[in-house]
Length: 360
Ligand SMILES: *Cc1c(COP(=O)(O)O)cnc(C)c1O
Image (cartoon, rainbow, N blue to C red; front, side, top):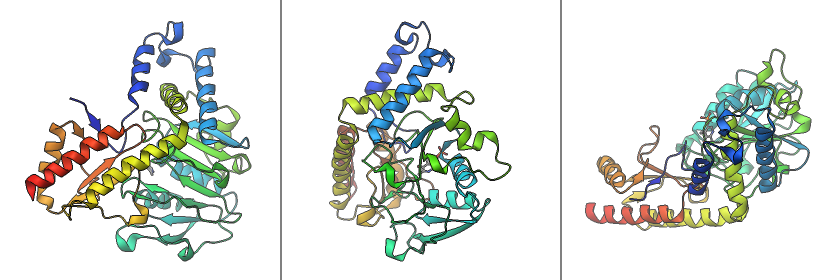
């Protein structure tokens, strides 16, 4: 039976990458070592890390005045590192509140300064993104933080606010590399790897150089972007195996048409699934506003929540795994990241149609 894993993260990885990692597991390119056993300062691993950075720069068209950092601590650690590094003597930062991850970023930032919530969609249970016209931005803010894809709520927006000279900071944990973005519009981008890139344990930060080096007093060395920027992310031992797997994913993306090709497939996958929900005559329902339906995380409820358990059980039996929704939302959630093939979504929608027919 073919297994399709719809987990929100850690999530499915490209099959061809797992096969390559298996083949290279015991002896990487004749080195006699597994990548896990290599010194991070040896020439083999230095080469792996440099290639991963170069390929990511190419895939995302990252300008030369941005640093790419391979860190640990997850996106959650960035919730603190961002204010510590980017307040730069200012007292306040702007945050958009579109859901659970925005809220966590906001509450962490409050430990370091004043937070101005420019707009919030909490009034409608985080099911939409407030129009930019309604945002109350502060022209003196240290930065403006947004979450372009709320992984739990399944709320995504593809437009960028015009923040003027205020650096734009984005949590792209669940949408990085799923669609082209213009990195030059951002001051800082961050993403935990375990959604759309590679294994848990690696966090990627892309930061404009002029924003580095002005941390608040008392910032630990490890939480200062400058430490990592000055040492090519090798101040201490980086998450070597995670960087290696991420590098294999980047190579795979390059072989397969890059981010633009991913976007095309992602649009097709999302359309198939949302069409199935919309065609179910209310048997399935997606709570998210049409314009903000995520291409990566698709939450949906069943008309009769008493059927939730049976839905998950029968889906599991078909090899359609991890569809249970987040505990804060309920219902189902299908995460359909880059590594989810179209065939996986096809299998899901045909099961959904059959389940609706049998239970209507
Ligand atoms: C998963 C996720 C996080 C948390 O990531 P960790 O790596 O577990 O800290 C933060 N933001 C978004 C948008 C996420 O999807």
